[in-house]
Image (cartoon, rainbow, N blue to C red; front, side, top):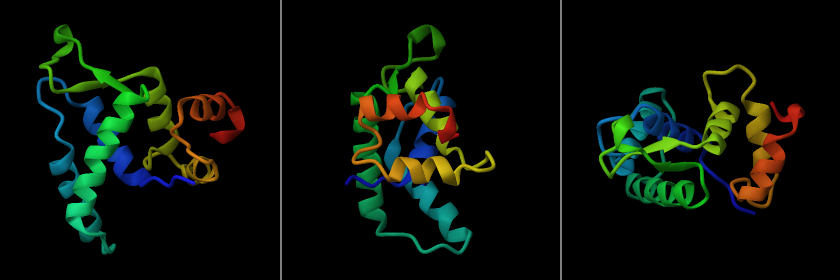
Length: 130
């Protein structure tokens, strides 16, 4: 069973969403994520490992159709992305600013691989997940 760091994925998706005009850089975002968690008093895992995971998540999100290269007319520079409809659905499910996001995260965690395209698309189509 594949487990994901939903908080880190949420951070990356928000950076994609707000990334017009600047390159997407997952390693510094992982550092910022770790600093924010530490400021909240949470223990963080090994920072180098977290940076590596962020880079792997970037590749996974791109390969599985959650993000795609940002068009030039939308501020694309060859190194930044936009959320796809699948990526937007994922962000809306795991967004910590939305009350009740724990249930969708738990449902996702219960899957063999929640970010598998067909698994996610099937789950996201069910109204009871949200």
